[in-house]
Length: 169
Ligand code: SF4
Ligand code: SF4
Image (cartoon, rainbow, N blue to C red):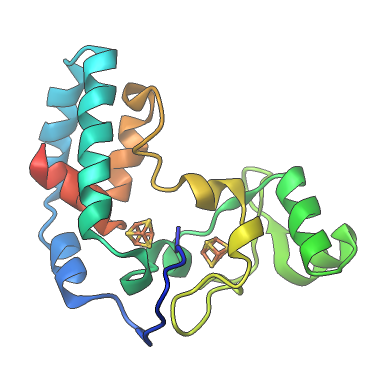
């Protein structure tokens, strides 16, 4: 999720070209692409998606997007809670009470979206200590892409980088 770069520009909405990328996604085509990918060998699929991931993030600037931080909250692990509380100089219990709730799957998530740590300029206020799920999103550089194809298909409607990966597949 949202990264840090050396310059600061005020971007409050998603870059229109990223919005177009998302709007152009057709669920039917995504489904077909997933079916094709299921037929690929696990290692080859990883290689292909990792290559496209690297290419996509050369073109997409998370600071001109922040759609994940606005719409898809991360799950927070106990380690995340301890690390972020320490950074905020809060007791873990106070952090949980102030910012988190337990969802229907019994996971800790933020009480509100957009994320309370997302700044108006799309920077993450707790970038160095952000949740593991934020660091790993959209997961297209991880091993075993076959195992998370359903999630990646869903993310193609939320994350312009994933949309671009599907476009290039
Ligand atoms: S939705 Fe994707 S492109 Fe946008 S900020 Fe999140 S990871 Fe970056
Ligand atoms: S903590 Fe919030 S603002 Fe920071 S990367 Fe995660 S979702 Fe985005």
